[in-house]
Amino acid sequence: MQAPPTEPANADNAFLYGCRTAFASVFSFVIVFTYIGFGALCHDYGFSVGWSMLSTALQWAGPAQVILVTALGSGTALFEIAVAVALSSVRLLPIVVALLPLVRTERTRAWQLIHPVHYMAVSVWVETMRHAPALPRERRIAFCNGVGFTLVSLGVVSTAAGYYLQAALPAVFGAAAMFITPISFLTSTARNSKLLMEKIALGLGMVIGPLLALSKIEFDLLWTGILGGTLAYGVHRWRRTRSAAP
Image 1 (tube, rainbow, N blue to C red):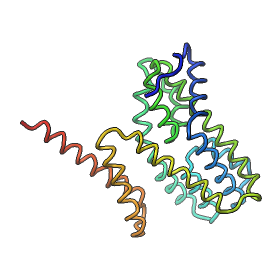
Image 2: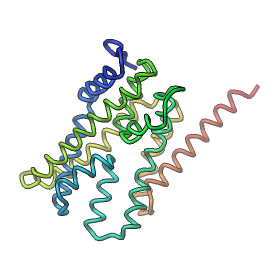
Image 3: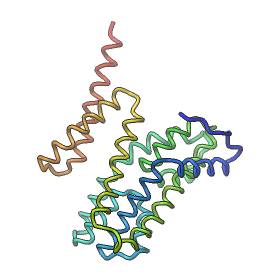
Image 4: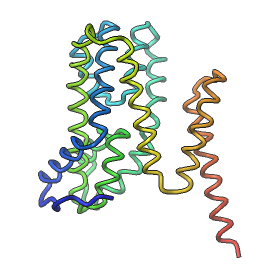
């Protein structure tokens, strides 16, 4: 946990501190290159630049956006697209649940959590979990909003840049840019895994995921999370029960 250089005196200062934190984060680099690739992808599938930028601002989930664009472009039924996008975004629920107790206070209203919840992605979650504990609790929502607003803004601008640069970019660049996101998420998750249960879940995911994908099992990502998380939690419970035994 890294303490801020000076404690924010008010919510505006906390918001600006969040903006500076986002700009200094490696995720700003990741977001720029990822959404340049996404913008180029939207251009290839014939979507307008306005639609592409709005997708980033409103959806703000790279994997789900790729699923949406490729599925719409290939003529997939809307119901199937909705299910696929929803399943790909289920991964965001645990980080929202983990974040809210950290940033909210007893006086926090529900509407004040709309922006932090919308901005919540692995990038925003990692930076907030790293820096927010060093801030006064009443400044944490503003800080989280600063991080999220900055990274979303970078994503929107980069989407437009990738859209117009598509003709000048080789096709392999778009694929490589999109690949940066899972690699950055993997390294960030590994760095922030403190508990043994978290490390076990990460290790099991790296083993189970490729096996299910190679076996061409449907919903392989979903099953990877269920199996890896359940086994890791089972080990955690077993260790806790064993240590509590006389």
